[in-house]
Length: 247
Length: 317
Image (tube, rainbow over all chains, first blue to last red; front, side):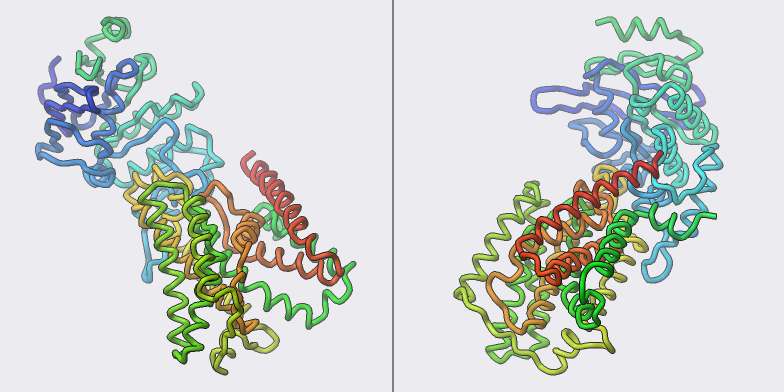
């Protein structure tokens, strides 16, 4: 696989992660390049979620190095991870249902006026701008409660948050598992759109068909190891499925 | 154009507005003396002690936690304050002591909950019994006088025109809490902590700190409520505030706050506390047995929650 000319954004080198006697990741090397979508595929227990949690700052690796733009970093918390431009979106939505869209997008990074009061006007305006810029239609107002949105729209709000705060990488942990076919397509469209504006993404899935249309490259995990990397143009669904199913 | 009433009914406080209108219509039409100025003044003096406690309980429930010890804090703060006043300590210093007691009890509840990870329902159930026991020991089971200076009485138990000063305090607290919850960063953090703690943590919010701060505010509001009650009756008795936690939770739930956290309104809580006392008042005016009070509050809770769900479903669909 030729990645010549590609600039690494995040590099995980020789990563091990153990939980007691269980080794979830073994000497794992994984690179995310600038402006690409990677499909991280593997069966249940392959180590996909562990890898995502390490990059999200929720787990620390037992051994190994993480480099962001060539600099070694420690991701000890979720906020460390977001500070380095890594945003995670889960299958059950990374949003608070009972809050409105603008408050969700700016959660933890609220815009304030003097005397600690929220600058709601600016938050609303910027939220609508960002939603429009990635083509999220039919929401109407950013003052709507997230609870009123469809599953796909909720994921889109989480993606909008990543865009607003100029994240470098989106980690999408099975983001369409609970969505309908139509909504899955809706979310896939946004993944393509954010790539077009320069945000890389890692799309985690245990089925290849789910990610095939939206990613540029596949990384296959099995029993905590990286067992293969393929550029989409150089492989097929069948080849990857075969590797996934082999022991 | 959508009318004011349409917007009001579809708002978060929609269900409680419906309940309040029914209650007020019933009272005005069928309850003698309800509209008497003396009765209204009585209501305005009675609502604030429950109201201020409920405001604290409301934000705590939005943050996803409970405090069953508010009734004991309500009594302990005033009891210690009264003991100090009777020893000759300056009443304003005693006032500060009362609030500090509330804050300390809240902080202990908060730390126990977030550090041990036990449900706050259990942690504060234990605290409720512990502090009530201490109140009984400290007071030796006796009522203690709560002597007031004129200025203190004017501020906490006086009148501004025809309106009880305690009610004005309640309005001030309601506005402050509304601003915190709806117009400040911290309000956003409270909603997200109760609504989806994983997302809140993911966004860098220190949810443990948020919870501890909210527990402290709740404790202080409970102590403040106790102070209101004691200045009104000018004594502290050891069983003061017993059962208050459930009444406050009832007021908060009637006001549209979810037991599961993440959703609730300050205005709704204010109206919820008003409804609870209006029911008590109506029963008194109708000379109904006092024991019926809980039964009526129970019916109103169920009615308000059903309405809430109905309005919520309509909004989403």
